[in-house]
Image (tube, rainbow, N blue to C red; front, side, top):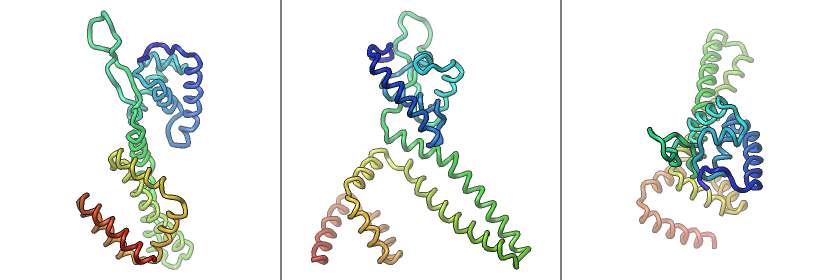
Length: 239
C-alpha cells in the first residue's frame, strides 16, 4: 500500500509489537533500541515512508525519529529514497526511507559496522596493554605475576585477532555467496560436521593449507571436476 496509512489495524498492531521486541533485542546486538525499532517497522511495511509517518507510527518525537533514521542509515539498515507521492507541489520531491530488503546485505553491513565500532578498538586497547606489560616486564624481569599477565595478554590478543579476522571476512563476501555458504552449512547434519572437524585434528596444518590454497586457485569448471574426482577417491578409500 506504498506509504499510505495501513488499512489493517491487526497487521499494524503486529508490526508495532515486533518493532518493540526488535528494539529490546537491539541492545544485545550493539544497536540502539530506537534504531532497531525503525528498521523492524520499515522491514514489515515493505514500502518507503517519510520521517513523519515513521515518527507517528512509533510514537517518537521529531528529534528522536530524525536521529534514529540517520543512525539506521549510517548502519546500512535503511536507505533514503525519493518521495514519489508528492502531487501538485513545486520543488524537489521530499525524502522517504525504506528498509534494505536484502537480509544478507544488511546483515553484512551490521557485522562490518560492529567490527569497526567494537572489534577494531578493542584490538588497539589490547595491543597497547600488552606492550605496556612487556615494557614493564623488561624493567622488572623477576616479577612472576607481571610475567604471567604478559603471557595471558599475548595469548588473548592472538585469539581476538583471529576472531576479528573471521568476522571481518563476512561483509567482504557477496551477499549471495554468504547466503549459499550458510545454507549449505545448514544442510550438513551435526554428526557429519563434527566428524569433519574431528578429521582436521589428524591432519598436518601445512597439508591443509596447501590443499586450501590449491583449491582456491581452480577455475569453477576445474573445481567441479576435482570435487567429483575427490568424492570418488574418498568413497573408494573408506570401503
